[in-house]
Length: 243
Ligand SMILES: [Zn+2]
Image (cartoon, rainbow, N blue to C red; front, top):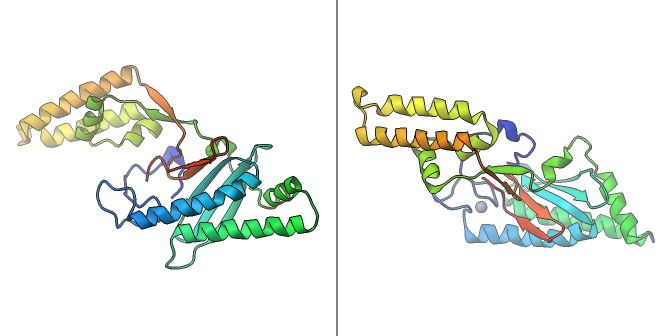
């Protein structure tokens, strides 16, 4: 689910899945399969805050696949990420595995403390045991993702051209817009039996996107594509930027 490490090749198809459990059994326009599903994950994420604060976390990221949940932690004293992984129990939501992961790591920490080592040394030791040098520190930091800033008309234009907004973020958008325009114009050209009004809208959409290309505007976003992100300064979790 988490795409932050592979974002340049981010899958452009927009498959709607529940942000809390990943099921595609979800109503159109919704971000979660049910209220309970969302609540369970929010509860587990809140529980993890205790652990994250103990580990002196600057940034953390939570993601899950069909079989595992992953919690990546970057403490305030270093630029290296530690990765905690927990296997999901069949039939249980990622929230359950995150809770188990948090309790397990907490137990480890208390075990170290019981050997009369200080709180910070216990935290450091847990992080060191789980260090994952291959992870790019930039991938965990918020405010490193540029989101295209579009007017309402331009957003509508994207729909007429059948372009996903992610294309403007990761892809060669000049080429993609041209390609999409050509494709849609071909389908709706009145000479080829297409819808004249629709064809006009497509041309208008293309003009609007050309205007954006001339002066492309982006805004920074503190959410990460496809992952839940935690900021130690605010002690808050943010939902993924996209599903
Ligand atoms: Zn769900």
